Amino acid sequence: QSQELSQVQIDYNAALQVLVEDGTRMVCTGRMHTDRICRFESLCYSTEAEEFIYFHSNSSVMLPNLGSRRFQPALLDLSSVEDHNTQYFNFVELPAAALKFMPKPVFVPDIALITNRFNPDNLMHVFHDDLLPIYYTMQQFPDLDLEARLFFMEGWSEGVHFDLYKLLSNKQPLLREQLKTLGRLLCFTKSYVGLSKITTWYQYGFVQPQGPKANILVSGNEIRQFTKFMMEKLNISLEESSSEEYIVVFSRTINRLILNEAELILALAQEFQMKTITVSLEEHSFSDIVRLISNASMLVSMHGAQLVMSLFLPRGATVVELFPYAINPEHYTPYKTLATLPGMDLQYIAWQNTDREDTVTYPDRPWDQGGIAHLDKAEQERIIESTEVPRHLCCRNPEWLFRAYQDTKVDIPSLIHVIRQTVKSKPGPKKQKWSGSLYPGKVRDAKCQASIQGTSEAKLAVSWQIPWNLKYLKVREVKYEVWIQEQGENTYMPYILSHQNHTFSENIKPFTIYLVWIRCIFNKNLLGPFADVLLCST
Ligand code: UDP
Image (cartoon, rainbow, N blue to C red; front, side, top):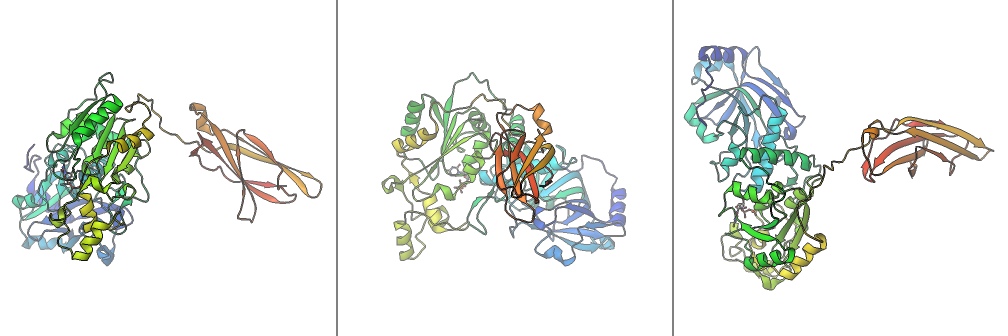
C-alpha cells in the first residue's frame, strides 16, 4: 500500500483550470445535519487553517443551500455518533478568484470518503461507530469501491486497531496530521463527506442515559455480511462443522479482571463437557481471536469493549456477559442489544456479582481508572456504601467508573445456574437452515356482502384471497386479522381468523356503513400490511 496520492496521472493544469472555472459542487442526501452525507467535486482543505473550503464560481452547486442554517449547528455529523458537538463538519466559502492568491493546490485523485473516527482506541467504538458505518456508507455509493481512500479528520493518531481500518479499502487511510505533508492546499477531485448511521444500535448516553437506539434499522443479516467481508480480508475461512466444540473466555488483563479465571474455566469445561480456552487482546492477534470466536459455542467475558467481538460468533452461539458488583446489567446493554438484534441468532445471558465479598475496588487509582480519592469524603463514603450505580450520563461519572473498574471473583454456582436457565443441553452453533422472516403481502380481492334481518339485526359476510407471495412460501401458520369499524367511530372490533371468509353478526346494525380492515399474519408475529379499506353498507 502506498501513501502517495499521485498514482493516477492527472493533468495538473487542466485540473487547476476546472477548479478555477467550475468551483466546488456539492449535492447531499438527508434532511437534517444528523442524517446528511454530501458528495463533492473539488472540495478543498487548507492544512494550515485546518478548514475545508468551498469555492464559488459560475458553475458551483450547493444543495442543500441552507444559508446561515448551515451553522445551526452544522452541515453534517462527520462521525456516526449523532449530533456530537465535537464531530461537526462545515466549510468556509471563498470566491474561486481567491485561488490566485493562495498556495498552489495539490489535487487528490482518489475518490475520498472523509469522516471522523469516534474513539479508535476502544474496540466497541471501532466496530460500532466506524467500521460498520464506513463499510455500509461505501455500499451506498458505487464509486466508493475498494480503490477509494479513507480520510480520518478527527485528529487522532493511528491507534491500536488501525489494521482493521485498512481492511476496508486497498489504499492506505490518511490521517489529518498526514495531510500537512501533502501540501498547504489540498483539493479532493471527488469526495463523500459524512457517515451513514443506519447500522448503529447504541447511544452512549450524551443526552440521556445510555441504551439501545430508539429506532434500530440493522439486522443480524447485515452484521453478518460485514463480518464475512472482514473475515475474507483477514484470510479466515469458516472451519468444518465437524471440528470440536468449545467455549471461549475473553479475558481482560489490565483491569476489570476475573480473579478466579482458572476456576471458572475448569467449571465451564466440566459443566458443558467442552474444551474451554481463554483469549485476550493483549496476548492474541486479532485474526486468531476472530478465528477462535467464529467457531465457538459460547463466549464468556466481563462487560467491556472486547465483547463486541461477539459479532463474529456463529449463529446459535451463546454470549455470557459478566457484570461487576453494583452495576445493573439492564443499564449497560451495547452487547445485549447486539446479540439480540433480529437475525443475529445468538443467545444472551447476563450475570452480575451481587456479593460485596467478591469484589475488589480501587479507590486510589487515577479518576479515569475508577479512583475516587479526589472526591470529598462524604461523596466517597456514599459511593462505597451504594449497592447500585444510579443511571447517569456519559462519560466521567466517578461512581460508574469506580464500579466499572472493579475486579470480580465470579461465584461459579450462581453463574452456572443463570447459564443453565437458558442453555438446557449443550450450547453451540446449530446447523439451522435460513430462518429469515418474510412478511405477508396484502390480502387480495376483499369483498363484503350485507344482509338485514328485521329492523335491528344485520350480518356482514366478508371474504378475501390469500396474499400473492404466500403461494411461493412455506409458512407454518397463516392467520388473518380483521377490524370492523363503524364509519365515524374511532373504535373498532378486532378479530383473528383462520379462514378467508367470515360472517360477522355481533354488533352489526342495519343501515350502517362499516369500514373493514384486513391483514394477513404469518407465524403469529409477522404482521402484513392492511389491504385497502373495504366500505360495506348494511
Ligand atoms: N482492554 C483490554 N484489556 C484490558 C482493559 C482494556 O483489552 O484489560 C481494551 C478494551 O477491550 C477496549 C480498550 O482496551 O478496547 C479500552 O478499554 P476501557 O476499559 O477503556 O473501555 P470498555 O472496555 O469499558 O469499553
